[in-house]
Image 1 (cartoon, rainbow, N blue to C red):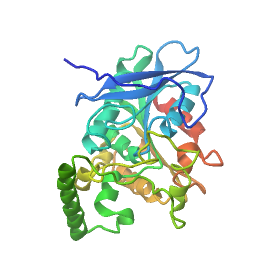
Image 2: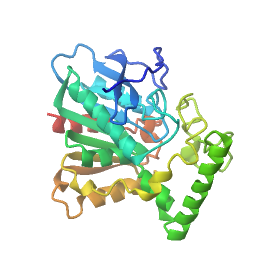
Image 3: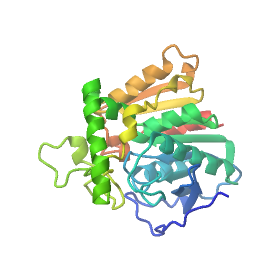
Image 4: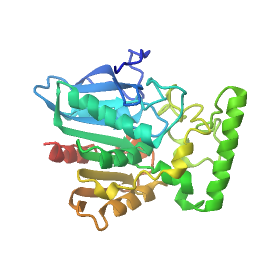
Length: 330
């Protein structure tokens, strides 16, 4: 018997963005195949009739649905799509114990469970479902699109490949057997320390207070009024130190070349992370018979966090996203 956990859900508006009068908002829950109950915000265009195209949104990695995933979801609902923004397993308002753990498998399943929920929703056309993954959830979205044949279109915005960066470091600067061995060794030692101490040590999130030489993409979002949220890992204590341990051994983009559905990768030209999308696009299109419906869109002058909430110049290309999903969710 599939059972839901009883979750404690905040009912008042506690997002980092203003509430739209163009959509109806409600809290919903659904269960993934590991029995974890996920919490989501659902946005429905006001006055909408008939079965709608739908989009599930998640990310960034360590964020909660009250931040930019909700902004993406609400904005796309204003444009005619039924949307949900959900918290992944072990984070935010979603269930799962222990807290602040990540898993390439479970988090991919979270997206698939969101597609399950949308497919069975009476307001949704199950043949017109897409997903949006932001930052680290962009990589998860690619992995999900390679696995879930129900997804007709997928967008990855300011994408991180979390398995690559965990296994190889930024710009593959630690891509060696020795470096990975030392990382594995340290995490194995941390596992025992955690058990001895009776709790999991947190990795620290975004450093507080921020040092003067902190990277600009760290300074300008999670600790500011622009992006802070009390339930966000990145705004507070961060993931557990061993929270992403299995990412070191599991490349999630292995079968991206086999994605048949439409894919749009969006990244800022000046983002430190732009190489993830460029390489992912090359990998999924090179010698692929499904390359015709794949696209890489580079936003001039934008940095990584500009695609979280638009930055100071409305960098998120919502018109492009609307055209993309309208074309492929028809």
